[in-house]
Image (cartoon, rainbow, N blue to C red):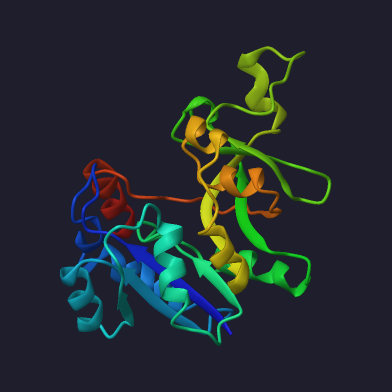
Length: 244
């Protein structure tokens, strides 16, 4: 069984109440839920939240939702708590609650590699095509090895192209943007929640560096499909125009 869990908090620093924000007649969390539920590779979908308003709203549109503790330090921890309630699930997909435009093909892409029994964690990346994204600390970059496994994630532009002027880096098409979509084998997900915070994770503020530092392998699939996350009210206004 493949289970998708959508962590959804109400108290976002930059955008309180974000999951319940209206997007042309449907809330953001409902749009995410429906996208995930339409993915053939997903057997079941559940929202994980610590807020009664989100809980009641998900029930109101016929979705499945579970309450979690309030003290989780990350979305991964919240997902892991709910995953324990579904012992029949072998693969857990962590879909961010602020990705109302997520494409079912992206979800399928993180599930497919689990046909290989050696795969423990998967995620996605896409080629960077805008120079501003390459140098933005809000856009996470990743480099992969020959087998498609993550070598490192960074908010800095990596790799550094020593013999190419920085203004020409974008033309070389060597930089990948990491998309915040993950899937894990169920037992691996529970192991990740026991790991201590790593120094690199603290430096970059990237949780996945904790997993790499501990020796876990992360397979990074490639996609040409964009990711349109909603972090601020301004992002929401642009997203509503896309919906309309």
